Length: 215
Image (cartoon, rainbow, N blue to C red; front, side, top):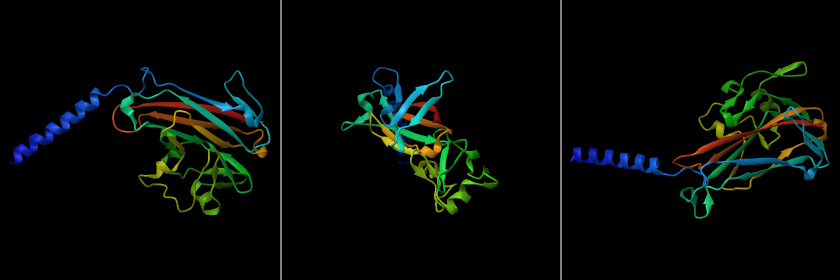
């Protein structure tokens, strides 16, 4: 009886792995492409220089939009008309206490957050803080739209899922990014990770980066 159960279990596992192996590539056309662009409608001016930096001139509203156009998934990865696709937005630019801003090499979508421990010191004026110090005083706001608060677990297994902003099940994602007139003269990086098929089976990840100068 035990041997029969063991053989059945092995056969089940092999059949599952074989099924995954025969699943098609996530995108219909055999290549998962993305096209993200900055919507100029809320900006006074927008252009890209020869070094690849996007120059954004404040146009009144305290935000701008990043819009995406994503390749369609194979029918195997569409459930009841819902595509299993996920987009994550993150930035290195933070706003803290009365408009004070700072940048850190913080890209959750690449699995990296100031060394992984959230404790690298961040100089602000003549003082030095860590992300945890700042969260105790006032939750810092990332310009893509999320905050770190003093009750947030920084080293829990689920911590990476709390960092960044997510858009799911949508071929035309749209994300608002904070842009205040006090940010003029600063630079920022906005990083976007797109996962084609966010469930089991073959998947494809595409990373897009915007280097921005606020004007």
